[in-house]
Amino acid sequence: MPPQLGYAVLGDQQSHIVARKGHPLLRRGFTLADLAAQKWVLPPGDVALRTWVEALFSAQGLPPPMLFVEADTTPVVFAGWCAAATC
Image (tube, one colour):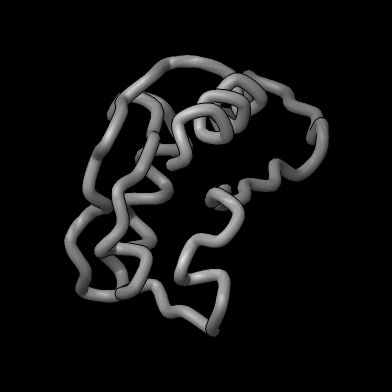
């Protein structure tokens, strides 16, 4: 942070993976490699969450998640869309 700027921590952001009820991975433990093989709904590449998710996979030597839908919207809308589309 440049010394001429100030900041205040507003809180921690939590991110969650959402899957449809009955998804096969929910029936057992799973790894990041298992998640890499799934289709994902993610924000565009210039959004911090997308960058973070891709870096998480890369740090484990995995390819980025398979993109099913790219949408620039809120997490609540993502969750509702996935519930309706059976992601």
